[in-house]
Length: 450
Image 1: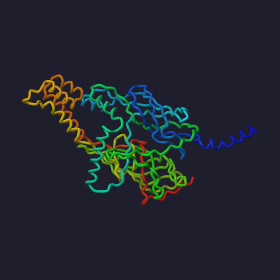
Image 2: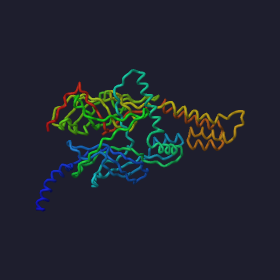
Image 3: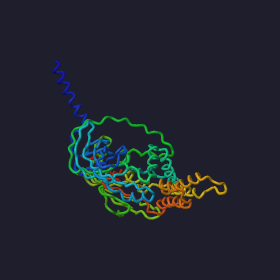
Image 4: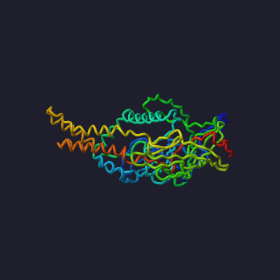
Protein backbone atom coordinates (compact mmCIF):
# COMPACT_ATOMS: atom_id res chain seq x y z
CA UNK A 1 0.00 0.00 0.00
CA UNK A 2 2.82 2.31 0.89
CA UNK A 3 4.54 1.63 -2.44
CA UNK A 4 1.35 2.35 -4.41
CA UNK A 5 0.77 5.58 -2.48
CA UNK A 6 4.33 6.72 -3.17
CA UNK A 7 4.00 5.90 -6.85
CA UNK A 8 0.69 7.74 -7.10
CA UNK A 9 2.14 10.76 -5.30
CA UNK A 10 5.15 10.89 -7.62
CA UNK A 11 2.91 10.72 -10.67
CA UNK A 12 0.76 13.54 -9.35
CA UNK A 13 3.78 15.74 -8.58
CA UNK A 14 5.46 15.22 -11.97
CA UNK A 15 3.27 17.78 -13.83
CA UNK A 16 3.83 20.27 -10.99
CA UNK A 17 7.60 19.92 -11.28
CA UNK A 18 7.40 20.39 -15.04
CA UNK A 19 5.23 23.49 -14.66
CA UNK A 20 7.43 24.96 -11.92
CA UNK A 21 10.54 25.23 -14.06
CA UNK A 22 11.47 26.79 -17.37
CA UNK A 23 12.48 24.36 -20.12
CA UNK A 24 16.02 24.00 -21.42
CA UNK A 25 16.79 26.48 -24.19
CA UNK A 26 19.55 27.80 -26.41
CA UNK A 27 20.86 31.35 -26.18
CA UNK A 28 21.59 32.27 -29.83
CA UNK A 29 24.91 33.69 -30.97
CA UNK A 30 24.89 37.48 -31.20
CA UNK A 31 22.44 37.94 -28.32
CA UNK A 32 23.06 41.31 -26.63
CA UNK A 33 23.56 41.18 -22.85
CA UNK A 34 23.34 44.47 -20.94
CA UNK A 35 25.38 44.13 -17.73
CA UNK A 36 25.91 46.40 -14.74
CA UNK A 37 27.96 46.23 -11.52
CA UNK A 38 26.49 47.18 -8.14
CA UNK A 39 29.68 48.01 -6.25
CA UNK A 40 32.85 50.03 -6.68
CA UNK A 41 35.81 47.96 -7.89
CA UNK A 42 39.55 48.67 -7.84
CA UNK A 43 41.01 49.76 -11.17
CA UNK A 44 43.56 47.00 -11.68
CA UNK A 45 44.44 44.30 -14.18
CA UNK A 46 43.05 40.89 -13.23
CA UNK A 47 40.26 42.34 -11.06
CA UNK A 48 37.25 39.95 -10.90
CA UNK A 49 33.99 41.57 -12.04
CA UNK A 50 30.57 40.43 -10.86
CA UNK A 51 27.78 41.99 -12.90
CA UNK A 52 24.10 41.26 -13.42
CA UNK A 53 21.71 41.42 -16.35
CA UNK A 54 19.80 44.67 -16.65
CA UNK A 55 17.01 43.00 -18.63
CA UNK A 56 15.57 39.48 -18.98
CA UNK A 57 16.59 37.54 -22.08
CA UNK A 58 14.02 35.88 -24.34
CA UNK A 59 14.25 33.61 -27.35
CA UNK A 60 11.27 32.47 -29.41
CA UNK A 61 9.07 34.24 -26.81
CA UNK A 62 10.40 32.03 -24.01
CA UNK A 63 12.20 33.47 -21.01
CA UNK A 64 15.76 32.11 -21.00
CA UNK A 65 17.58 34.24 -18.43
CA UNK A 66 16.00 36.22 -15.62
CA UNK A 67 16.69 39.87 -14.97
CA UNK A 68 19.54 40.25 -12.43
CA UNK A 69 21.14 36.93 -13.46
CA UNK A 70 24.81 37.09 -12.39
CA UNK A 71 27.52 37.22 -15.09
CA UNK A 72 31.20 36.89 -14.15
CA UNK A 73 34.24 38.35 -15.86
CA UNK A 74 37.73 39.77 -15.36
CA UNK A 75 39.57 42.98 -16.18
CA UNK A 76 42.05 41.87 -18.85
CA UNK A 77 43.61 45.23 -19.76
CA UNK A 78 43.84 48.86 -18.67
CA UNK A 79 43.86 51.36 -21.53
CA UNK A 80 44.98 54.95 -21.14
CA UNK A 81 42.11 57.46 -21.04
CA UNK A 82 43.99 60.24 -22.81
CA UNK A 83 41.19 62.82 -23.04
CA UNK A 84 40.36 62.51 -19.35
CA UNK A 85 44.05 62.76 -18.41
CA UNK A 86 44.45 66.02 -20.32
CA UNK A 87 41.24 67.49 -18.89
CA UNK A 88 42.25 66.53 -15.33
CA UNK A 89 45.82 67.80 -15.68
CA UNK A 90 44.51 71.26 -16.62
CA UNK A 91 42.84 71.28 -13.21
CA UNK A 92 45.91 70.12 -11.27
CA UNK A 93 45.04 66.39 -11.17
CA UNK A 94 47.85 64.26 -12.64
CA UNK A 95 46.31 60.83 -12.00
CA UNK A 96 47.01 58.46 -14.95
CA UNK A 97 43.37 57.63 -15.69
CA UNK A 98 42.53 54.34 -17.43
CA UNK A 99 39.62 52.60 -19.07
CA UNK A 100 39.13 48.95 -18.04
CA UNK A 101 38.73 46.24 -20.67
CA UNK A 102 36.52 43.47 -19.25
CA UNK A 103 36.07 39.95 -20.60
CA UNK A 104 32.92 38.18 -19.38
CA UNK A 105 33.17 34.39 -19.41
CA UNK A 106 30.39 32.75 -17.38
CA UNK A 107 26.73 32.99 -16.42
CA UNK A 108 25.64 31.95 -12.93
CA UNK A 109 22.09 30.56 -12.80
CA UNK A 110 19.80 30.95 -9.79
CA UNK A 111 20.50 27.43 -8.47
CA UNK A 112 24.27 27.99 -8.72
CA UNK A 113 25.08 26.28 -12.03
CA UNK A 114 27.85 28.06 -13.97
CA UNK A 115 27.48 28.23 -17.76
CA UNK A 116 30.67 29.22 -19.66
CA UNK A 117 30.41 31.40 -22.77
CA UNK A 118 32.56 33.70 -24.87
CA UNK A 119 32.02 37.22 -26.14
CA UNK A 120 34.01 40.19 -27.32
CA UNK A 121 35.89 42.35 -24.84
CA UNK A 122 33.81 45.08 -23.20
CA UNK A 123 35.63 48.41 -23.47
CA UNK A 124 33.31 51.41 -23.23
CA UNK A 125 31.93 50.96 -19.73
CA UNK A 126 29.95 53.85 -18.27
CA UNK A 127 27.10 54.45 -15.84
CA UNK A 128 23.76 54.05 -17.60
CA UNK A 129 21.08 56.73 -17.41
CA UNK A 130 17.47 55.90 -18.30
CA UNK A 131 15.82 58.83 -20.05
CA UNK A 132 12.03 58.83 -19.78
CA UNK A 133 9.70 61.02 -21.80
CA UNK A 134 7.45 63.17 -19.59
CA UNK A 135 3.73 63.64 -20.24
CA UNK A 136 2.84 66.39 -22.72
CA UNK A 137 3.64 69.82 -21.29
CA UNK A 138 0.71 72.06 -20.50
CA UNK A 139 1.64 75.67 -20.96
CA UNK A 140 3.82 77.77 -23.19
CA UNK A 141 7.32 79.20 -23.17
CA UNK A 142 7.31 80.28 -19.51
CA UNK A 143 6.22 76.81 -18.33
CA UNK A 144 9.02 75.15 -20.31
CA UNK A 145 11.58 77.54 -18.84
CA UNK A 146 10.28 76.86 -15.34
CA UNK A 147 10.54 73.10 -15.91
CA UNK A 148 14.14 73.54 -17.10
CA UNK A 149 15.08 75.55 -14.00
CA UNK A 150 13.40 72.94 -11.79
CA UNK A 151 15.46 70.19 -13.42
CA UNK A 152 18.68 72.14 -12.76
CA UNK A 153 17.65 72.76 -9.15
CA UNK A 154 16.88 69.08 -8.63
CA UNK A 155 20.31 68.11 -9.94
CA UNK A 156 22.06 70.58 -7.63
CA UNK A 157 20.11 69.49 -4.55
CA UNK A 158 20.62 65.79 -5.33
CA UNK A 159 24.39 66.24 -5.00
CA UNK A 160 24.08 66.93 -1.26
CA UNK A 161 20.87 65.04 -0.44
CA UNK A 162 20.90 61.99 -2.70
CA UNK A 163 22.07 58.49 -1.73
CA UNK A 164 25.82 58.02 -1.12
CA UNK A 165 26.42 61.72 -0.53
CA UNK A 166 29.27 60.83 1.85
CA UNK A 167 31.01 58.87 -0.91
CA UNK A 168 30.57 61.77 -3.32
CA UNK A 169 32.23 64.08 -0.79
CA UNK A 170 35.18 61.69 -0.43
CA UNK A 171 35.56 61.50 -4.20
CA UNK A 172 35.45 65.30 -4.41
CA UNK A 173 38.29 65.48 -1.88
CA UNK A 174 40.23 62.90 -3.92
CA UNK A 175 39.73 64.99 -7.06
CA UNK A 176 41.58 67.86 -5.40
CA UNK A 177 44.68 65.70 -4.83
CA UNK A 178 47.28 65.66 -7.64
CA UNK A 179 47.49 61.86 -7.59
CA UNK A 180 44.81 59.57 -6.18
CA UNK A 181 43.43 56.03 -6.59
CA UNK A 182 41.09 55.31 -9.46
CA UNK A 183 38.20 52.87 -9.37
CA UNK A 184 35.54 51.32 -11.58
CA UNK A 185 32.44 53.18 -10.48
CA UNK A 186 29.38 51.47 -9.09
CA UNK A 187 26.68 51.40 -11.77
CA UNK A 188 29.14 51.04 -14.66
CA UNK A 189 27.48 49.08 -17.46
CA UNK A 190 28.60 47.26 -20.60
CA UNK A 191 26.67 45.68 -23.45
CA UNK A 192 28.24 42.56 -24.99
CA UNK A 193 27.14 40.03 -27.58
CA UNK A 194 27.57 36.28 -27.26
CA UNK A 195 30.08 34.87 -29.75
CA UNK A 196 28.36 31.49 -30.06
CA UNK A 197 25.15 29.76 -28.99
CA UNK A 198 24.93 28.84 -25.31
CA UNK A 199 22.93 25.92 -23.93
CA UNK A 200 20.86 26.95 -20.91
CA UNK A 201 19.49 24.04 -18.82
CA UNK A 202 16.00 23.93 -17.31
CA UNK A 203 15.64 26.27 -14.35
CA UNK A 204 13.16 26.65 -11.48
CA UNK A 205 10.36 29.11 -12.14
CA UNK A 206 11.09 32.54 -10.64
CA UNK A 207 9.32 33.25 -7.34
CA UNK A 208 6.47 35.71 -7.27
CA UNK A 209 7.67 39.18 -6.34
CA UNK A 210 5.43 41.54 -4.40
CA UNK A 211 4.88 44.92 -5.99
CA UNK A 212 6.78 47.51 -3.97
CA UNK A 213 4.96 50.65 -2.89
CA UNK A 214 6.86 53.63 -4.33
CA UNK A 215 8.25 55.94 -1.63
CA UNK A 216 6.96 59.44 -1.20
CA UNK A 217 8.92 61.85 -3.36
CA UNK A 218 9.97 65.36 -2.39
CA UNK A 219 9.46 68.14 -4.92
CA UNK A 220 13.22 68.52 -5.42
CA UNK A 221 13.70 64.85 -6.39
CA UNK A 222 13.49 63.58 -9.95
CA UNK A 223 10.13 61.88 -10.68
CA UNK A 224 10.22 58.10 -10.90
CA UNK A 225 10.09 56.50 -14.38
CA UNK A 226 6.63 55.42 -15.39
CA UNK A 227 5.86 51.72 -15.69
CA UNK A 228 5.73 50.16 -19.15
CA UNK A 229 2.30 48.52 -19.32
CA UNK A 230 0.67 47.34 -22.52
CA UNK A 231 -2.27 49.56 -23.43
CA UNK A 232 -4.49 46.96 -25.02
CA UNK A 233 -7.66 48.96 -24.33
CA UNK A 234 -6.46 51.82 -26.57
CA UNK A 235 -4.80 49.66 -29.22
CA UNK A 236 -1.28 50.83 -28.40
CA UNK A 237 1.65 49.00 -26.87
CA UNK A 238 4.84 49.76 -25.00
CA UNK A 239 7.59 47.92 -26.91
CA UNK A 240 11.15 47.33 -25.65
CA UNK A 241 13.73 46.88 -28.38
CA UNK A 242 17.49 47.01 -29.06
CA UNK A 243 18.92 49.28 -31.75
CA UNK A 244 20.57 47.35 -34.58
CA UNK A 245 23.09 50.10 -35.32
CA UNK A 246 24.61 53.08 -33.49
CA UNK A 247 23.03 56.53 -33.81
CA UNK A 248 24.57 59.92 -33.09
CA UNK A 249 23.63 63.56 -33.42
CA UNK A 250 27.14 64.10 -34.86
CA UNK A 251 27.11 61.51 -37.66
CA UNK A 252 23.52 60.44 -38.34
CA UNK A 253 21.64 62.12 -41.18
CA UNK A 254 17.98 62.96 -41.58
CA UNK A 255 16.25 60.18 -43.49
CA UNK A 256 18.83 57.55 -42.50
CA UNK A 257 17.15 54.14 -42.30
CA UNK A 258 17.27 52.43 -38.90
CA UNK A 259 16.10 49.15 -37.38
CA UNK A 260 15.51 47.83 -33.88
CA UNK A 261 14.84 44.27 -32.73
CA UNK A 262 12.01 43.65 -30.27
CA UNK A 263 13.64 42.29 -27.09
CA UNK A 264 10.58 41.13 -25.14
CA UNK A 265 7.32 39.65 -26.43
CA UNK A 266 4.10 41.63 -26.02
CA UNK A 267 1.07 39.65 -24.87
CA UNK A 268 -2.63 40.28 -25.35
CA UNK A 269 -4.97 40.24 -22.32
CA UNK A 270 -5.83 36.62 -23.16
CA UNK A 271 -2.09 35.73 -23.01
CA UNK A 272 -1.77 35.20 -26.74
CA UNK A 273 1.21 36.85 -28.43
CA UNK A 274 0.59 40.20 -30.10
CA UNK A 275 4.21 41.12 -30.94
CA UNK A 276 6.72 38.25 -30.75
CA UNK A 277 10.28 38.71 -29.54
CA UNK A 278 12.61 39.03 -32.52
CA UNK A 279 10.23 41.20 -34.56
CA UNK A 280 11.83 44.18 -36.31
CA UNK A 281 10.90 47.84 -36.06
CA UNK A 282 11.83 49.75 -39.24
CA UNK A 283 12.09 53.52 -39.30
CA UNK A 284 14.31 56.52 -39.98
CA UNK A 285 16.11 59.42 -38.36
CA UNK A 286 13.78 62.43 -38.56
CA UNK A 287 16.14 65.05 -37.14
CA UNK A 288 19.86 65.13 -36.41
CA UNK A 289 21.61 68.30 -35.31
CA UNK A 290 25.26 68.11 -34.17
CA UNK A 291 26.53 69.85 -31.06
CA UNK A 292 28.09 73.28 -31.61
CA UNK A 293 30.18 75.89 -29.87
CA UNK A 294 28.84 78.03 -27.01
CA UNK A 295 27.30 75.05 -25.24
CA UNK A 296 24.73 74.25 -27.91
CA UNK A 297 23.92 70.58 -27.54
CA UNK A 298 23.14 68.02 -30.20
CA UNK A 299 19.59 66.97 -31.04
CA UNK A 300 18.46 63.56 -32.27
CA UNK A 301 14.98 62.33 -33.16
CA UNK A 302 13.98 59.06 -34.78
CA UNK A 303 10.79 57.08 -35.21
CA UNK A 304 9.56 53.80 -36.63
CA UNK A 305 6.90 53.34 -39.30
CA UNK A 306 6.83 49.59 -39.86
CA UNK A 307 6.69 46.49 -37.68
CA UNK A 308 8.03 43.36 -39.36
CA UNK A 309 6.74 40.20 -37.64
CA UNK A 310 8.29 36.84 -38.61
CA UNK A 311 6.02 34.77 -40.88
CA UNK A 312 3.47 37.58 -41.07
CA UNK A 313 2.70 40.71 -43.04
CA UNK A 314 4.62 43.88 -42.28
CA UNK A 315 2.37 46.16 -40.23
CA UNK A 316 2.26 49.95 -40.52
CA UNK A 317 2.75 51.68 -37.17
CA UNK A 318 3.60 55.08 -35.78
CA UNK A 319 5.74 55.22 -32.69
CA UNK A 320 7.04 57.69 -30.12
CA UNK A 321 10.27 57.22 -28.20
CA UNK A 322 9.35 57.10 -24.48
CA UNK A 323 12.55 55.72 -22.96
CA UNK A 324 16.18 55.05 -23.78
CA UNK A 325 19.39 54.02 -22.04
CA UNK A 326 22.36 56.30 -22.51
CA UNK A 327 25.91 56.71 -21.23
CA UNK A 328 25.17 60.46 -21.07
CA UNK A 329 22.55 62.13 -18.91
CA UNK A 330 20.01 63.07 -21.58
CA UNK A 331 16.34 64.02 -21.55
CA UNK A 332 13.44 63.16 -23.84
CA UNK A 333 10.62 65.57 -24.49
CA UNK A 334 6.99 64.53 -24.89
CA UNK A 335 7.51 64.10 -28.65
CA UNK A 336 10.41 61.68 -28.18
CA UNK A 337 13.22 64.10 -29.11
CA UNK A 338 16.54 63.39 -27.34
CA UNK A 339 18.48 66.37 -25.97
CA UNK A 340 20.89 66.90 -23.11
CA UNK A 341 19.45 67.78 -19.72
CA UNK A 342 19.57 71.46 -18.75
CA UNK A 343 22.87 72.15 -17.00
CA UNK A 344 23.70 74.57 -14.21
CA UNK A 345 25.92 77.04 -16.07
CA UNK A 346 25.90 79.80 -13.47
CA UNK A 347 26.53 78.58 -9.92
CA UNK A 348 29.98 76.99 -10.24
CA UNK A 349 31.69 79.79 -12.24
CA UNK A 350 30.33 82.38 -9.79
CA UNK A 351 31.42 80.39 -6.72
CA UNK A 352 34.93 79.90 -8.14
CA UNK A 353 35.19 83.57 -9.06
CA UNK A 354 34.26 84.60 -5.51
CA UNK A 355 36.82 82.18 -4.04
CA UNK A 356 39.46 83.43 -6.48
CA UNK A 357 38.96 87.02 -5.27
CA UNK A 358 39.70 86.14 -1.64
CA UNK A 359 43.51 86.63 -1.82
CA UNK A 360 42.90 90.21 -2.97
CA UNK A 361 40.81 91.00 0.11
CA UNK A 362 43.45 91.98 2.66
CA UNK A 363 41.28 94.05 5.01
CA UNK A 364 43.26 97.19 4.27
CA UNK A 365 43.81 99.47 7.23
CA UNK A 366 43.13 96.77 9.81
CA UNK A 367 46.53 95.13 9.99
CA UNK A 368 45.31 91.71 8.98
CA UNK A 369 47.20 88.80 10.48
CA UNK A 370 49.58 86.90 8.25
CA UNK A 371 47.76 83.69 9.02
CA UNK A 372 44.51 85.15 7.74
CA UNK A 373 46.25 86.17 4.52
CA UNK A 374 47.67 82.70 4.00
CA UNK A 375 44.21 81.22 4.55
CA UNK A 376 42.75 83.44 1.85
CA UNK A 377 45.62 82.51 -0.45
CA UNK A 378 44.88 78.82 0.13
CA UNK A 379 41.20 79.31 -0.72
CA UNK A 380 42.00 81.25 -3.89
CA UNK A 381 44.57 78.71 -5.07
CA UNK A 382 42.21 75.78 -4.40
CA UNK A 383 39.63 77.35 -6.73
CA UNK A 384 42.06 77.00 -9.62
CA UNK A 385 44.27 73.96 -9.08
CA UNK A 386 42.85 72.10 -6.09
CA UNK A 387 45.48 70.93 -3.59
CA UNK A 388 48.31 72.15 -5.83
CA UNK A 389 46.84 75.66 -5.73
CA UNK A 390 46.35 75.42 -1.98
CA UNK A 391 50.02 74.53 -1.45
CA UNK A 392 51.11 77.42 -3.68
CA UNK A 393 48.93 79.77 -1.65
CA UNK A 394 50.35 78.54 1.67
CA UNK A 395 53.95 79.03 0.54
CA UNK A 396 53.48 82.80 0.75
CA UNK A 397 53.14 83.48 -2.96
CA UNK A 398 51.96 86.89 -4.14
CA UNK A 399 48.20 87.42 -3.59
CA UNK A 400 47.94 88.57 -7.19
CA UNK A 401 49.54 85.35 -8.44
CA UNK A 402 47.30 83.17 -6.27
CA UNK A 403 44.20 85.12 -7.35
CA UNK A 404 45.25 84.57 -10.98
CA UNK A 405 45.33 80.81 -10.32
CA UNK A 406 41.82 81.02 -8.85
CA UNK A 407 40.48 83.07 -11.76
CA UNK A 408 42.03 80.51 -14.10
CA UNK A 409 39.80 77.84 -12.48
CA UNK A 410 36.73 80.08 -12.81
CA UNK A 411 37.61 80.75 -16.47
CA UNK A 412 37.92 77.00 -17.14
CA UNK A 413 34.48 76.39 -15.60
CA UNK A 414 33.01 79.24 -17.68
CA UNK A 415 34.64 77.96 -20.87
CA UNK A 416 33.37 74.39 -20.55
CA UNK A 417 29.84 75.58 -19.76
CA UNK A 418 29.44 78.52 -22.12
CA UNK A 419 32.00 78.41 -24.96
CA UNK A 420 33.05 74.80 -25.62
CA UNK A 421 31.00 72.37 -27.71
CA UNK A 422 27.79 71.25 -26.07
CA UNK A 423 26.99 67.64 -25.29
CA UNK A 424 26.46 65.27 -28.17
CA UNK A 425 23.62 62.75 -28.22
CA UNK A 426 24.57 59.21 -29.16
CA UNK A 427 23.24 55.70 -28.76
CA UNK A 428 25.52 52.67 -29.15
CA UNK A 429 24.53 49.51 -30.98
CA UNK A 430 22.19 47.31 -28.88
CA UNK A 431 21.02 50.29 -26.83
CA UNK A 432 17.73 49.45 -25.10
CA UNK A 433 14.92 51.77 -26.18
CA UNK A 434 11.23 51.90 -25.31
CA UNK A 435 8.69 53.02 -27.90
CA UNK A 436 4.94 53.46 -27.73
CA UNK A 437 2.75 52.83 -30.75
CA UNK A 438 0.30 55.61 -31.51
CA UNK A 439 -3.25 54.23 -31.81
CA UNK A 440 -4.67 56.64 -34.38
CA UNK A 441 -2.04 55.76 -36.98
CA UNK A 442 -1.18 52.18 -36.09
CA UNK A 443 -2.56 49.14 -37.80
CA UNK A 444 -4.50 46.94 -35.40
CA UNK A 445 -2.13 44.60 -33.60
CA UNK A 446 -3.78 41.22 -33.45
CA UNK A 447 -2.55 37.98 -31.87
CA UNK A 448 0.12 36.40 -34.00
CA UNK A 449 -0.93 33.07 -35.39
CA UNK A 450 1.93 30.70 -34.79
